[in-house]
Amino acid sequence: MASIITRTINGEVDQRLVLSGEQCGRTMSIGNNWTSMRLGVRFSINRTSAYTAPPTLFAGICSGTSEMYADGTTKHFIGVRSNASNWGYATGYLSPANNSFVMFKKVGTTRTDSSLQTLSNAAWIGSSPTYRGSIIIDFTKNNGTFVEVKFYISMLNQWDNTDAIFTNIMQSFVAPSSTHTTMASSNITVDEATNGYFDTINVGWLGITEGMEISDIAYSRLV
Image 1 (cartoon, rainbow, N blue to C red):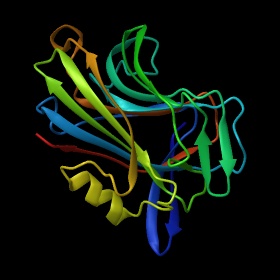
Image 2: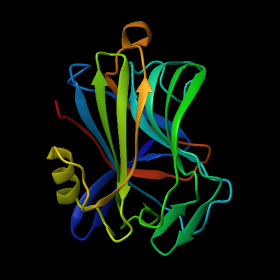
Image 3: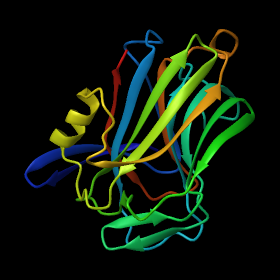
């Protein structure tokens, strides 16, 4: 079951949602009243070794909170999930292997993958409570018929995404190129009128019980 913990990092009190083999969802105050929006998740994985059978990390947007991505049947989801066969480890960070993230949608029980992106060593996932990385996803709709998805992940030398760094990214209208690696961009065909309007944030950490510690889940309407 999800829990809340408190950590203090460099004098900054950080309350975290801990997911252990589960998902969370939050309805956006802007509902589906957006053309372009940014989703950001700031987090760390509290682990000090490699994964040979890694979990699935996912983030995206869906229609409502009752039938989200990790439920048996999904109303309408679009986003990004990890897809690597193993995650390497070095002090302070985890590095998913090739074919590491895929952009996709899910309707009902059918999952449709889009572009598969190979991860370089310029990106990382923090594996210590003091190393908070983040993933950023930009969504742009076109009359409810397709969504352009752009995906970014923290650079290796960006050792900690502080509150100030993360807030600046979420308030900006430009790609976070100084702190994040651009992973991929893809157009995914959707039908909001038939399958449901994207009005909810959906994030999860599936297949393993040790915690994903989430410092922030944020969104901003770009257009």
